[in-house]
Image (cartoon, rainbow, N blue to C red; front, side, top):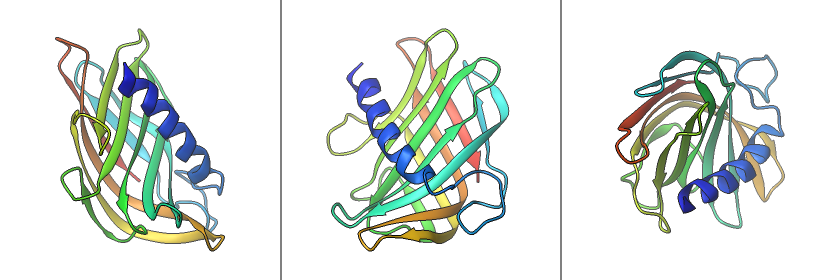
Amino acid sequence: MNIRARSYVIVGTFLVTALQYGCSGSGGSAKQNTLPCVVDVAGPITQAGMSCQVGGSWYSATNLGTVTLTAIPGGPVASVNFQVGGQGELSVASYTNTQPNAFGIGIVEDSTGNTYVMGVGSNQTLHGSYTMGLSSVTVSADTGSSKAYAVHGTMSMTLDGPAGAGTETLHATF
């Protein structure tokens, strides 16, 4: 239960920051990803082809780079959110939950309230795992102390479910 509460706070805080610059799954300006953003989930909850919004951010005060995604729910899915990252600015690279200073939160929730969670970081017990490959990272806003990015890549994530419910998998292309 603590992971879920913490997850929504963390995801919500960074989601607003990453998306306030217009980083979304479609569009044509320099501040938006120009490729479709699509999320598929499989397991006890299965839904393919959900549209999503994604963006990246970096803050000099913490020197943390993050990628944040939220899906437009459909079918049995009530919400899909994730935020992953690590030390330093975002770059074209591969990221995993096993790298030093990696952190991440992922949530898939169904319409009945069952929640599947991925969580990794210094203050959390490991739940699930992730791998992310960024193929393009473009600065869309720079204040000097923070940056917003349009990002393209893929994400694969395994999320742990409630006791006895099994695991959920997520795959996003953005």
